[in-house]
Length: 139
Image (cartoon, rainbow, N blue to C red; front, side, top):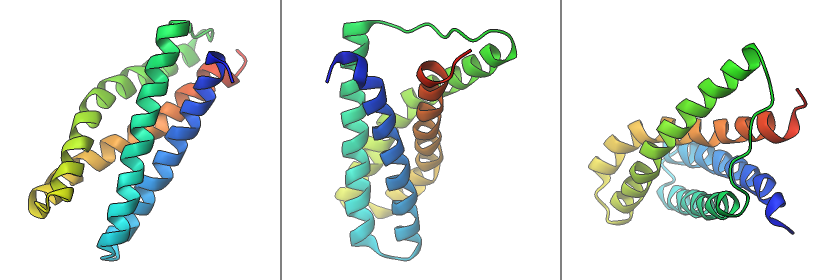
């Protein structure tokens, strides 16, 4: 494996995080708190692994220019902008919600999770979309 393989690893980690977030959501809706806790722990871990891999890649390779032109460029930049801004909010919020759950502060955990979950799922999904647009689509 080389540094050039890390975007694919990152997309896989984001995809896995998305699956874990949806699973965690469904588990808590079914009142399966212990299973929810395990799945959400895995989501935090995969997100942390993504962040480390992402930073290593960009430290080693730098930024990659999007080559699409016209309306697709506008779509890409809009997705990238919202993804980046929401990721900056979602990361500390997810960690806060996780700690609140682990420390059994469930009322605050639940209240903040209702804000955090949609942001986190959006960031996870758009991370994969950005990967496809940047590395897999030919423009």
